[in-house]
Length: 305
Ligand SMILES: [Zn+2]
Picture 1 (cartoon, rainbow, N blue to C red):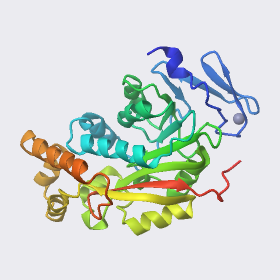
Picture 2: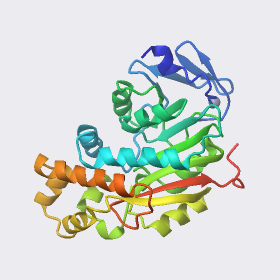
Picture 3: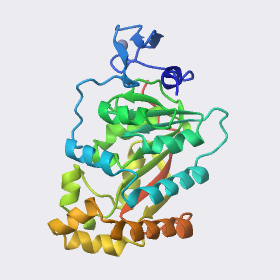
């Protein structure tokens, strides 16, 4: 991948995150025409817009753990397939140049899926170390290190905003309103969150979760901040009884196994998740350990100027 393809985002319109002035591209950096703010392109191949920013609710240890297990934990592969199939079914193909942005893209696992489906893709993440890993992956996404509630891009540019297991870490209002600002008028939001408060365990605390969601609570929250749900389902429905028992009778050994399952667990559980997506991926499953929603931007909500 060339540096130019990483930097380009030729169709992107940039906007200052401090004063909303227009950002002009110069060699290797962006400069605000109004307040002179400068955003540099980091040697690790991302736009460094949030140097020193330490977002609350996502502990370092958790981030390192995720980087380590992503692609290996049985939870990820079938979930990735389910999310991709939901995008195929629920994101309209009307636009000629389709764009997607993932808020909280982490090490870029899902950016690779988005890059196969959308013409232009942007990944936003607060942690530069995660973006440096994402930049080494196969996606052609433009990567921006930024607070997800003040993204340095102009309004109304994206057919899809994805927020995968992010909402439970952040203040929902500013996050969802920023997602609505970035979306095109009939743009879609793809959200996944941990489901069912009854599954709450020390693992949620360690992960920095604010809460686990029930569907009605998520629907209400999305509606309050600019989004109408068009599809919902749950993931890990077949394994739900196992997860429930593991959380209910949570011991340190069980928690360790949940965080780092042995092959004897990971292989059959991974197959069960794949089977679930193959058989029921198009249905609205009423239970599971994750809640997944596709929402449409409510046109009457005006995005911030
Ligand atoms: Zn500015």
